[in-house]
Image (tube, rainbow over all chains, first blue to last red; front, side, top):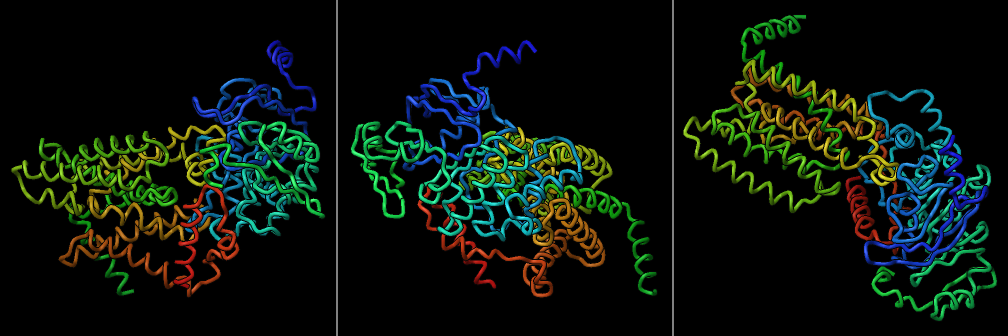
Amino acid sequence: MMNASKSADHSILTQSEVVKAQKVVAGYGEKVLWQDANFTINRGQFVAVIGPNGAGKTTLFRLLLGLQQPISGTIEILGAQPTRGNQKVGYVPQRHVIDTETNVECLELVRLAISGNRWGFSLSSQNERKQARDAMEAVGASELAHRPLSALSGGELQRIFLAEALVSNPEILLLDEPLSNLDIRRAKELVGLVNSVVRSRNVTAFLVAHDINPLLPFLDSVIYIAYGKVATGKPREVLTSEQLTALYGVPVEVMRDSKGNVAIIGNEDYCGNFCKDE
Amino acid sequence: MMSMNGLFLDLAQIFQYQFMQHAFEAGTIVAIVAGIVGYFVVLRRSSFAAHALSHIGFAGAAGAVLVGASPVYGLLAFTSLGGVGMAALGQRAEHRDVQIGTVLAFMLGLGVLFISLYTGYATEAYSILFGQILGISITDVLVTLSISIVILFAIAVVYRPLLFASLDEDVAEAKGMPMLIIGVIFMLLVAVATSIAVQVVGVLLIFSLMVTPAATAQRLAKRPAHAIAISVAISLAATWLGLLLAFYEPYPVSFFITSLVFAFYLFVRFAYPRINPSKVQKAESVELKLAGQSKDTHHDKTDERTDKTEEHNIED
């Protein structure tokens, strides 16, 4: 009891806040990717993480997963320091496509996300199978249960990965570029699905994407990482030429078309080596 | 009925010979272990690492013979060291083909040196390379049995984490699973399984028990437990049939075993999909292929996938 109340006192989060970053500097060793990041994300928000390749979007996820520590500053997730293996955080890594020869059925992968970290031999229990089936149903993938992973299309795979992340009933979802292998129609379908998960389960979802436009109708916040800095806020407020130019100190232009689509144009050479893939 | 009677008579006759008894005992144990471990080897795409381990074992076996010990101890020592070394280099070290190949060639060379220093029978080298199941002693059978019990127990303990880590490395890591430890345990399992399997098929033919049955089984079953059962069944059938055939025909057992697993593989790979097309679902990845030109950092992986898909389509 003592410990619990103590850690609650020390937490910098209020009730509705699930992630809070204060003066965070992130990178590898001496190499700083971004610095001075201050932001707060509330429960039940749908958050897009955007920015050029190599700007440090995945690094933000690695910090939240406890796979990497900030160089300085503090980051809190659900009232505590991020730790590896937090069951409350569901993660879909930036994928590598599953091998064409991996002839293992989808249900098996989703089921392993429940009990795969347990030692000792056990055949799958009824309960586990039901949990896995429920997660697959929640992402509209029930009919894929017995299909081999190798036979899935990109969109179907992402649904299975989402089910895999959801099966342990997480409060936070970290989705790293789930849209990158999908055509526009499937990307929109997946974004709609993530949105319904966020709303129906009051889950907070962070989604890394190259293109913010399919996400715009659903977003509560955007985290824009570029030029070594991090901008956060409501999409309408953050994604303006004035805001981004002022923040980054280089000319950044945000253009909107008649349908509300956004294009962010900046001098991406500025971030040097990190941008070579773009 | 006649033929059944005949078969039983034959078996009775075969088991009168002690060397055939020992061969069946050791062969059965090895087939079970290799069939199970092989499934994970195939799932993790570590077949080259397994192949390399057996070659590293060759130097160990030859060294053991040189100092007058049983080859299986040399095999165990060298493959375990090699396996732990590969695992300790990192999860993806199992796939560093060039580095592994370099070490493999050196170890084979070392084995050749040991063999040439050995002044006894030259057949030792031959039996390490191609197996010596018909010359197996009761001590070897007992050693094989004890080792196998340890392996099976270890697999029972690591079954789920190993399966999950093999299927989805990134998520498993994020869930806090000890990837390095799992990797080391896996390579140790492969090392030890390889060491005992060498007695049956030899260093050079290790694929036939450690990879081919599991690769065949993976085409037939989508659930790991089922695939493992099929893998064991195939390696058992090939070993038993191989021993039976070798009893009557003057050709090496390992030739029969390798031919039988190869025949199974060919059948499942090419004939089975025609007989039972519903069971074999091909990757219908046209959509993925079209979307494959993503600009993310995983260029090579996407390309690899596209290549493989094309290969599939050509075969269709």
